[in-house]
Amino acid sequence: MNLIFYILIVLLGLAGLILSVLSLSGTWCVLLAAALAWWRMPETVGPATVIVFALLCIATEALEALAGFLGVQKRGGSRLGGAAAILGGLAGAVIGTPVFPILGTVAGMLLGSFAGAFLAEYGRLKRSTHASHIAFGAVWARLAVMLLKTVLTLGMSLWLLIGLLR
Image 1 (tube, helix red, strand yellow):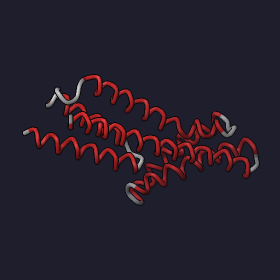
Image 2 (cartoon, rainbow, N blue to C red):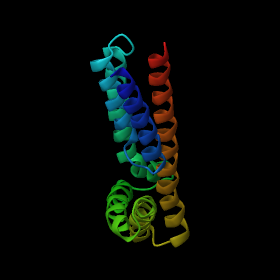
Image 3 (cartoon, helix red, strand yellow):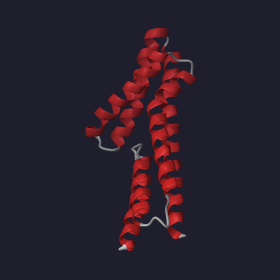
């Protein structure tokens, strides 16, 4: 019976990694795997691991939600531009998903973040070169968070795997 749980936990970790690469919430799959391991095999994974993983999931989601805003701010954009990057990214992901599932979500999120920030900053500055410079800040910030999320998911998965192998 434990073999089935080991396989399930490994599959959840792999699914989490794949989802994170696609800018989806893969860290939550690893948290679920850790919770299952703690529930079924408490000698391998303790409650501290589950709590730390949960906090990491929440922090990562918050950072991802704010990434476009922070990228715009870093390049000297306005709060309106940052908010437009967040809303544009959300709208782009929603629109891109049915057009081209999974990759369309990521592409739509990036294009939407750029478009939202660009339109807001162009309206404020009336200069397309500066507005596009600021808007690319939203895109780069979102890409950086995607990379961070993937690395974090990999680290969480490896930590869990090492705990299971002890």
